Length: 413
Image (cartoon, rainbow, N blue to C red; front, top):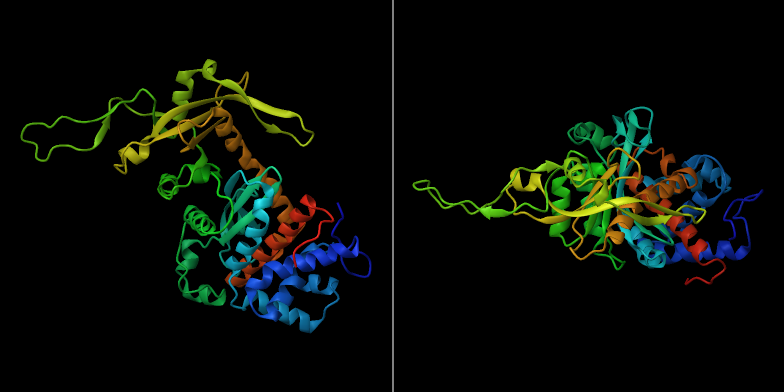
């Protein structure tokens, strides 16, 4: 594939048609931005993301592009203050590129952006899985389409801790719109999924790690919205096993209204306890993918129908059958991972397992978005600017995906 990199003296490396394709790509998706100046700035910024060089923050990027103070000021205003909607650009990119990657799943995740100081929107000392510890950082929630031919971010949301949302002066300095209220990471992820569900792109089961899978409200909201999911859960998650019978209790004389809620005929148990009760002999070897060298990857899994206990016991919801997916590697003393899924009862175990294991491919997305394209290099202190930057980095990432899938192919202008 032709590499889109800078060469001495500036400009995109490789054949001239690569640069022409980039201009055509951005010109196509940036039409939604309206004004010609915005479209020009979008093209310039995306090109800057693709240029070789270290820091992809605005000042060094403009310098590498050969621009001066006028270009810097124009891009700064375009990023931090211009009122264009980043969701429009993300939708245009998704509707063009998502069908090309043969989407199998949508993955929800979050990532940390280490920061100095306290004035960047959402920054505070908080836990980030990116570093595996508490650090001064921002956290961005994202949804990605994943398929055998690539990945594509579908949306970004900057997480604002409650103390940020309750501080008028910090909100004003970071230009946080008044309608933005506190939302958990799961609520932000659900909002991104709901938004992308209205686009003309392939829909697919939602995957997520334990931080999302353990959230009963998120699982319930996805199910009510008609979205399928395969979400990781903790070993201690309470479930009612497949033998459980739910029935309405008999009315006791003189005790008021007759009961109507369904009650289980036995106590719930943890996912781990159920797995150990089934034992390793209930597991089967299933191939779930291949490594970069093409070698098949497999492990031992079991799939059993259960009902999550929390929605029944705490929220008083009707029992709802789901798949509990258990991974118990060969020779291991116990299970290593668990997932809950609302895929149909007829779903084959192979599909359940492949979806469960597909989530890890998102790490490749983050490495390119951060390591090569500068997702974590934004130094501005504007809430809208952060979302503009993320949408433009996504545009650059999508162009590289299209180039990899169709090298040298003509593109619509």
